[in-house]
Amino acid sequence: MSQRDSNTSTDILQDEEMYDIGTPTRARELGGNLAGLTLGQQIFRLAMWPFFQHVLAFMVGMVDIWLTKYVGVEGTKSVSDGSAALNAVAVAAYLGWGMWVLPMSMMTGANALVARLCGERKRRDANVAVMQAMIVGVILSTVSAILMLLGLDWVLGELNMTDETLPMAKIYMVILSFAMPFIGIMTAGNQSMRGAGDTRVPFIALAMVNVVNTVVSSTLVFMGYGVAGIATGTALGWITGAVVVFYFLITAKSSSKLMFRPKRFHRNWPMIKRIVKVGLPTFGESVGVWGIHFTMFFMIAALGGAAKGSHLLVVRMEGLTYMPGWAFALPATTLAGQYIGLGDPVRARQAVRLCWIMAVVFMTAVGSLFILCPEFLLGAVAKNPKNIELAKTPLMICFFFQPLFATMMVLNGAYKGAGDTRTPMLITWFGSLCVRLVGVFLVVSALSNWGGAEWLYAKTGIDLQFAKDALMQCNVWIKANWGIEAHPLTYVWLVMNLDIAVRAILAMVHYPSNAWLTKKI
Image 1 (cartoon, rainbow, N blue to C red):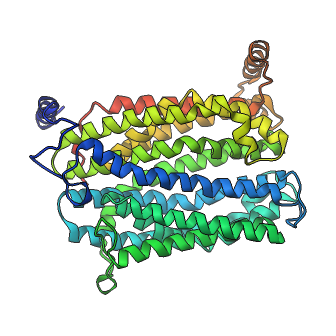
Image 2: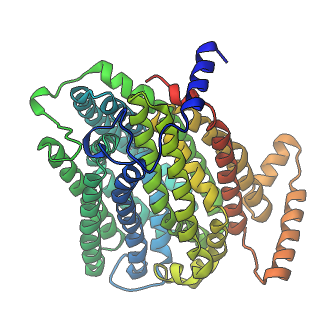
Image 3: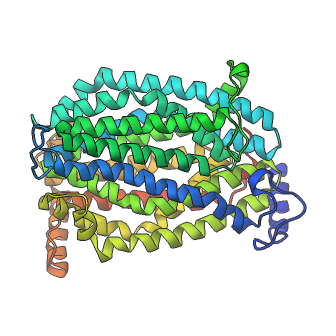
């Protein structure tokens, strides 16, 4: 450690007890709508709207799943068990995530930069950053949509889809791609306003997304337009959200007072470079995560038709705990950036610690529903008994990892808000590659006819019979003690949660360091 780092560490340790979380500090204060508040009040003000926002984001995905119960095999008014439409929406969910990765990850740079500039009282520069974020967001979203459309036929052809499911997934992605430039606008605006401390407008925007999506999608599905109707409602919802965000920015009616001024709208390369510099590691992290998840989805497809839909059910239902998790991760991101910009790393660390505790408590409390009533939760949105049965045990497993999930979400969010986006990227890459991808490969190869075991043996001489024997013994023990016949999807989700545990531990190891508190951006 250098002498400068040593002095910084000593100063922070000596000052750790100077500030009382329960009382406002008078030496240095944040501006805007956070001025004059205690640390706890700042956190709850920032967390309130994101919580409601993620409730609505959760509903957007769940409405799409719920409507698949009323889509016939041909996408007509006839009602089936919804399995074909559910599988189509499952595939589209992963592909849609892939389109969103590029603009969403790069806008992390806008969030951190605006937070830092607001903390430094450089409001004019923050407005410039917002306008540059808009440029970057629209360009990247458009590029993502074009790339996805160019490779769509190949990707769908490799996913072992049925003749009924494939055209449904294709039409969903084609329709959604037209909304991507608007998603870029909404993402850039929301991330900028969050960095400035305004979480209310992003909530309002997502509320409109949810209303339009629910009304339009439901109407079109019951008129007989099937998955195309679901996709149209979703796309129109995101377009509406972008209009709302742009309205608040151009009229400066956001509490952040950020403003989009058309007369001053021009390219500013230095500011764009700062946004890209901070956002690039998060892009690397997000692309890696999506690539690994999508590779996993290829493997899960080998477990049988019901596995894809059941996997999406668990992913969406686990989103219940994301609501309080992200609600407290966002204040950690914003307050870390603003207090560091203010020159107060002590309260930056205190804010992160308090957000961490709250996220653990609330995520664990909500996650208890996965143990108490898993069948009720899954049955509320799915109709096929096979999908519900396969999803039940993986959902129950998720409960036990909620404290670690909360830890990972809040600490990685804090590091990104401080401008240290490289650390979360490295942690994510390590866990996703070394734990998640390898583990799922072993599980699917050992317990299905996918062919991964034969490929591995031909390339390396490694025989996965040991893994198959071990998993079979686990099945015997689980059935004898719990009365459950564990499906391979159960082991897939166990591996995924072990990955979360590893990443949470690595994030905790980095937390005592002062490197993330002194990051230059």
